[in-house]
Length: 198
Image (cartoon, rainbow, N blue to C red):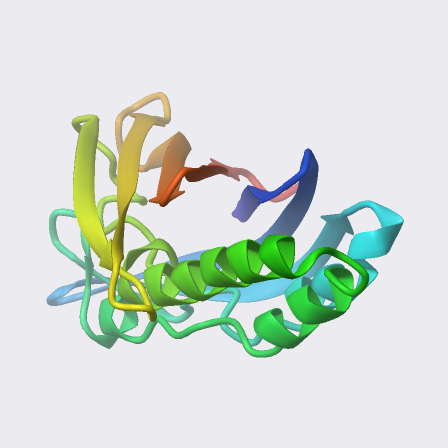
């Protein structure tokens, strides 16, 4: 089958990066549930020219997928995959390059947000929803986000999905993530689609 994930991430000032990744996936049944094996077969990054460095970071992100993924008999992701999320290598350096020439206040505000995204990625947003492959009920979660300067922000995550005809696995799913740092609000949106491999 083919699994496609589209990530849209706001970076401020109207700038946005959209990353589309596609994997060839196979479900292998075993006594404890299933193993989902995945091989990335395509990646596309859509970003404005000034964000070329950030786009390159996304293309080369080694943590772009959690495969192989272990599922229990209920179709939930289990095991080390859920604990292995890490920050994105090179993101801060790319952001600094993008902000060259900006005011000191703008640079400080943007870098605080980037560091918050790094922390959020390690804590929550890099992890795929545990019920991604068998979504049942929509949900929403809000957490406090500690900041490097000792302050705090919030991260609000909502997730909902639909099952394919027959109700055996994911058809489509969407996760929205809103990060608030002081007066700055950024949003990201992820969509997944699982379909037959043509």
